[in-house]
Image 1 (tube, rainbow, N blue to C red):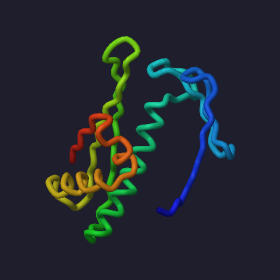
Image 2: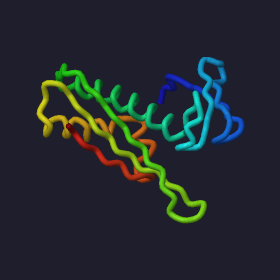
Image 3: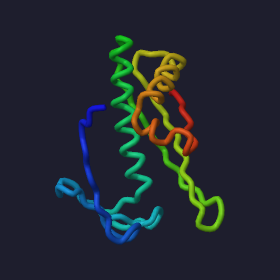
Length: 134
């Protein structure tokens, strides 16, 4: 296996703090979900941003392999649930659209992408992921 990239983020303060890239290229204030703190985000938003970008890039690979040139848009919704006191879980909904492709074919490509995407592989069997095409 060939390593192609490594990154590191350091957090202080948890959901009431900040996260900073080790190389200082990215810094963000962190706030609890729903707190509406100015200029801050939360781990769920960051996860959704990363998953959607990763999934769309993996979809580009799948489309290239199939000779499909239509532009794709991926929306990832991350939900945080509390099953019981101090027992939290995530669920993800991935909604994709590919220009010039039927919804059925898009759904097939999205499911293929789910087998390729590193985020999908990392979460397989750990969180519920629902995939839809529009």
